[in-house]
Image 1 (cartoon, rainbow, N blue to C red):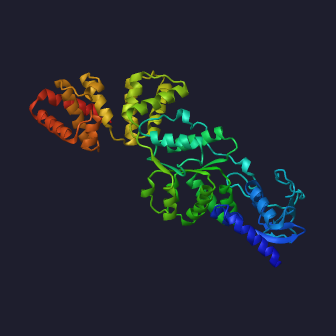
Image 2 (image 1 turned 30 degrees about the vertical axis):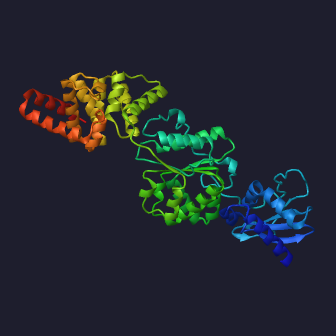
Length: 477
């Protein structure tokens, strides 16, 4: 290699380094080798067909300007692509010419190589080797859209952030967007909804959803087949990467390292990254600190247990989508009874419909109670404060809104105190949380209510009967 060629390429790299992110420079320019310079034609050697196509798609304008600046206005660039056959490099790499003398925009050149030549393009770990970027399947579930993701206080921040990302992927401060919450709170649904919305708004963008388990399996397979570079390069091609249940990468150091390089590359190029987890970043164990610090670069938005209003809306939306009608009291009973998990809530609805269909019975409140009795035993669910309030209000024939009001009527105060008593007895909620559900009372009021109920149960037989009846009604929960 002549000194002149070395110096020219070194000068080119110096300019490139100042114009592209560091990770992109290391990935796409450090592996290039200058081969020769003859008649104002600079030939550079690249490791693969995929590598050449990536340079042409993303950096051809930059390369054209730099080559002309260093060599002259008549400069041209040629690629020498290293061919591999059964693991051995071919001694006769074919060349693709890319003229730089035309003032018009340079289009990707066609490869004038024989069809039977053994080119090894990047491998797609999802389907088969050799699929190009435009053929990547997003793996998105069309049933999980923003249209059927019910908004409530429990998810408003995460949903709003997701919608902002869908409108401008990679162009907001929410990159990465990490959505976290317990099982059944809607993390997967929301991440799919973002991906679907981006695909609809920007058909040209490549969106990819993958679970962390699938990502890990693909990495292990790539190690076995010596295709780590293809694995990493494949993921670096996407515009929007959605990784579900990122917590399952904990303890997998090599997999985390591969993901770290993918994350860096995408983030530095302004691509959107969306992650879900069952824990906040600060609570993730077994994750490298450099990854955790990057998870905090954007926004971490939590999903909480849906409140009563949201649960009723979820059931109504599910019934509308399935073309089902249920009595209002049945819907409310389901919403009051299943309070901690959206999947369980929808599962209870499906079970109720199945019971009605198989037994040829109309759906009534009694049938719902029978089904919920069995369903709750199978799921070992804790009774909710809201359900206790409903049972107490039904027993005393009071509107639940009245019990939560500030009225001091004796019968309302008594019902409120009983609801507080059973909430303390049958749930793990704090006194402050119980008071919040009972019209914004403080913990001292709840404690006073519990003492009052205990005292009356020992001195008032009628009141004791109330408690016994309510205890039986609530015990099935």
